[in-house]
Image (cartoon, rainbow, N blue to C red; front, side, top):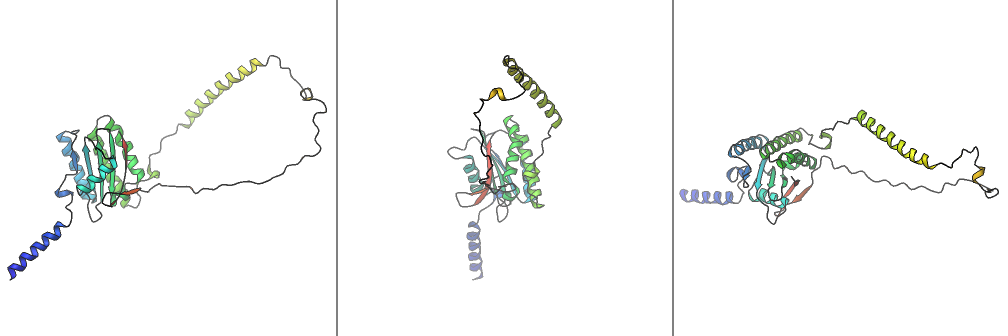
Length: 264
């Protein structure tokens, strides 16, 4: 009888475990290069970094490179990879997945779980600005290592209560003195040329001490003059500030994810 109960218990456990997804550690690596843009040594280096950050931060940091997304958009393809390959860590399946499609030079980042909090819209755009020039030059390994480092940085910032947003963007230096001098010189030259042309056209003009020569005597008569204030219109609009926010959408299964992308 005991043996029979043990067998039934084992079968029940197998059925229960089959009902839950098996996550990335037992299915797909965090780096898949189906387009062969990386050498074996580069793959090993990048995968080691992705695994280390993912384990340390408990957020799956993933890169998938494909030749084409076929009939799908880059967003749809990235979302499908996240779902179909069961990427994500923890109950909320925290993940940041970078898709690269070589056919039309598409990139897209899908975020899930804590990845949505850590990578705001501003953060995703910033990552794109950083890695696009590298990928455009064919330096994919450098771009992917930078992507991993930025993901780690943004997760740390979010955990400290300050997700990366517009206030964290690097400020470009403004050469005020140089620009002032340039504008002054250009303006002076342009003004000198324009006034010179106008002056040359005034060959029949003579100096006048009064305006009577320009009016017909008796043609202007003002009986009464006053200023009347009628009304004014003031329009006020609420200022929108999306800094620090993450736009989201749902996948084919109804999971809420964030993301953004573009071309390189």
